[in-house]
Structure formats: structure tokens, C-alpha cells
Amino acid sequence: MLDFASSSSRLRRSGLAVALAVLLCVAPVPARLATFPVSEIRRGQVAEGITRLEGSEPVRFKAHILGVLDGVVGPRRQVILARLEGAGLEQTGVIAGMSGSPVYIDGRLVGAVAYSMGQFPKAPIAGITPIAEMQDATSMPAAGLRAVAAWPLDTPLTPDALRTAFLASMPGRDGIAVPVSALPGLDLDAGSRPLLRPIATPLSMSGFTSGIGGWLADTLGQAGFAPVSAGAALVGGQPGATAEGPLEPGDAVGVSLVRGDLSLGATGTVTSVEGSRVLAFGHPFFNLGPAQLPMTRAHVVAVVPSLLNSIKLAQLGEVLGVMDQDRATAIGGTLGAGPRTIPLTVTLRANGGAARAFAFEVSEDQLFSPLVVFAAVANVLQSYQREIGVSTIKVAGSAEIGASVLRLDNVFGGDSAVATAAASVAAPLAAVLRSDLGTPRLGKIALTLDTEERQRSTRLDRAWIAEPRPRAGDTITLRAETRNFRSAPQVHTLAIPLPAGATGTLQLQIIDGSTLAQLEGRRRTVEQARSVDELVRLLNQQRRGDRWYVRLVRPAAGSVVNGRDLPALPGSVLQVLGATPGVVATSLDQDVLGEWEIPADAVATGQRTIAITPLVP
Image (cartoon, rainbow, N blue to C red; front, side, top):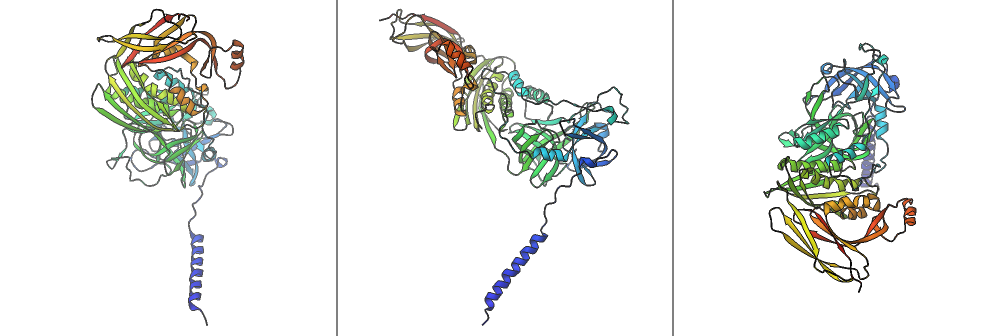
């Protein structure tokens, strides 16, 4: 007897298998990007480029091929020279923000517009980065953190010091000399040396005051950017909202450095999109190598024409993914979830008024994060604090660094209190991020800033000990008289135990934190730490400006080895240690027998020294 039910079941399964096989055969496979190799480039060919100027629709332009330059941006690197035509480029020249605009011949991608010919050009001459070089560079494996110069702990807390340290790690952007013979028909002098330079990358800035905005624009301008002021993106009445479709070649794209109550980021143009992989710019953002910066949509608002340097005004939009490669010939990104960022919150109480809260999402990077944190904190202070005249700023806060907590508590006064307070937050972050102690992970940074538009300082007037002839082993009483401006003096009392075996003359030093930090100089260095946690502990020992430090010392000839005082260390041993890798050794002229603190409610100033010769029992 036939089992019709079983036969029917087998037929259905067989039919499903056949249908699935048919679907797999006819399912569309993503087409591989069609490219036009440099070997097929010929003078006189006409290519077509795409970019976005004003409005939502892409515009097209022509690129008349002039030739290929070999080895001009590095060994085996090539740049395709072309004269651009159309889209008003004859009047504007190559526009800052066009970097990455794709160029096609016969529907195949040649590369990205990436270089422009100097300033005041007679024709819009551009350099095109071949797409093969963009693909090759951005396919390199991520090698982890890049090596950057360490941050000395005695770096001055000034904007100039921050700028110098930042720019010292930035690569140069020299021009490429182009032979005049490669540019016929442009009426150039035979002796001229036209230069191709990477197209300036617009840096969109929003929410900055003129003071800190100008400083930041000048700093990043020296690194090859073209800073422009632009408001936060408003699409459909909501910040960051968008009704646009998938990212396409020719679209504007951004790289964000900070979002929230400030917006700062670079903008350029998408060259290609293959699946989730995006290539753009055609030249480096900063040539950071592996990176983890938010990749965003950008919206071109207008083009500002100029004989000097025409520029796109663009606003950063929503995060589309992560820029994970920043190489000499392109930036590369991956669509999807954005990278982790550092949450920064600042609560400001200006002159006893109501608290104002500010929130930022700072992109995590060894070089940019400290610079952006400085700018954000200084910008908040400048927005609600006068810029001329003395002021007092109290900083209270912390930063999560792995399993450790970095304390950010201090007080600053004087004419430069705003800049010094902001730098005091950025400097220890730079020390951590630029160290070679593994991969530090910055978590939340929370700050509370209390400001007053007057100098609040407390002066140390005099200090004495109550016992006229103390003995070794006794506990003496230190009295220190301090005075605030137009206030009655205040006397602080502190018990100081003398060592039982003390001989000779001792010194009792009362020194304000700012002065002591300068006197200690290079005794505290990043090299003393062997891990991120050790470095955070070292940073938490930094002297504070709102207290006096009381130290009992005696003369000694020794050394400081990796941050530890060794007063009895012979000089011959110091010479051996000084030549040992990983050991930081300096000379020591005094031995600290004990240390105490006298807190102040303002900036502490002044110092006193009391000589003590204990009697031997």
C-alpha cells in the first residue's frame, strides 16, 4: 500500500529545495566597484565629476585630463592632473570641501579630487588621487594606538603650550611642485613653480565665543584646515534630523570632534560606497592612521566664492558610522554604529548665580581629545565670565580612566584664570592619553566650575612655633597667620612631630601649592609610572593652588629615583641608575621628613621657613 502522505511530504520538501536553489541563483550579488586604472589615463580624456554645492541635488562638472605625475606624494604614488570645468568652478576655482569628489570616465571611477593649484589660479587645476591608492591605503590593518610624544607634567598651563604640543605632533602639508611643461595652454612663466596642495578641509564650528573660537581656528588653521562658523544642523525643525537616503558618492560627509553644546568637525565629500565601506577626501584628515572618530552626514548650506580660497559652508548631521582609517591618500569609514565617545558635563555657577549645565560628546583621540576638552571648558567660562580683568575660578570634578578616578580639583586666580583653569583639566588627560602605558579608556568627565569676578586670595603673613627650644622626639605646635583681602587675620594650628633621632638644623617650610609645584620642577614625570593606574595616582598628587604645604626637611645628598626620594643614595649609584633604561633618576638636595597641609578657601599665596635645631635628650 502506497503512503501518499509520506510521498506528498517528500515532494513538498523537494519543491522547496528547488525553489531555494533557483532563488540563490537569481538573487542579486552586489556589483564590484568599476574602476578606471591609471594605466589607461591619457591626456585629453574628459572625465565627469560629482559633488554637492548648494541645495540637495548633486552637481556635475568636467575634468579635462592633463596628465599623470609620478612619485610626487611618495614612492609609487601618483596624482592625475586635470582642469575642471562647469558648476561655476571657472569663477570659484577648486572649492574647499570638494575633497573626495568622485571623477568617472565611461562610468568607471578614476579617483577623487584632492589637490588644488595654489591661490589666485588662472584655471581650476586639480589633482586627482587614484581610487586604487585610496583602496590600498585604507585597507591596512589597524595597528592599535599610534606613538606620540609624551606629555611632560611640568608643561605650562597656557593655551600657547597646548597649541605647541598639538602642532608638534601634526604632519606637515607641503605643496607638490608641478613642472610647467605639464600645464600647457595656461600661459605660465617658464621659471614659475606652481604647487599642488591638499584642498583645505573646511572645519565647521558652532557655539564658540570669538575668543576661544579664534584661538581654535588659528591652531587648526596652522594644521591645514579652513575654519568656518556654522550653526548646528536643523533639518525639518529638529537638530540632527534628516530625511535623506543612503550615503552616496558625491555626498557631503563629516568627521566629528565634539557634539552637543558645541559642534566641531571637518567636512569633505564621499568618493565611493561599497556595502558598508566608505572612502572619502582623497587626502588625509590628519594622517592619524587607525582612528575611531564619528563619521557623520554633512549638509552644504552655501558656497562662499573667493579668489583666495572658495569654501563650502557645511553643517554636521547625524552620526552614520565610524571613521577608522586616516591615511595619506584617503579616509575610510564603516557605516553603522558610531564609535564610543567621552561624555563631558560642565556645571557652571557664575558669580553666585544659578547653576547652568552643559553637555558634550568628545571624540576619543590621543591628540584631539585634550585640545577639545580645553576648548569646551574655556568656551563655557568665556561665555559667562568677563574676559578682561581678574577673576577666581574653582574647579571641582573627576575623570574616569579605566578603573581609576582622576581628581580635577583646584582653584585659579588672576588675569589668566580662565585659560589656566581649562588647561588644568586638559593637561592630565593629555598625559594619560599620550602615554605608552597600554590603552587608557576615558569614561565620564564631570566638572563643576564656580567663578567670581574678583581676585580671591589668601596671603600667608607670618608663621611661628610655640615651643622656643624643642627636643628631638617632641611634638611642636605650628601657628600660621593668613589674611584674606579686607578680612580679619586667621590663625591655623598644626601639630608637627619631630623625629626622635633628629640632629642638626631642620627646616619647617610653609609653601603655597603653586610655588611648590614650580620648585619641584621635573621631579614628577610620566616615566615614573609603570601602568595607567600608577600614572593616575601620580597625577592625583599634583600640588593644588588652594592650600599651603608644610614640610619638615633636612639637608641631604641623595637622589629621586622613579619619583621616590632616596636621600642616602651614593652618587656613584645614581650614575649607574641614570644609565639604566626605564629608570628616571635626579639629584636630591634635601630629605622630606614629614608633610602636612593647611587648606584655604581661595588661592593661597606666600611662603615662610622656620629653622629648628632640636635639643638632643
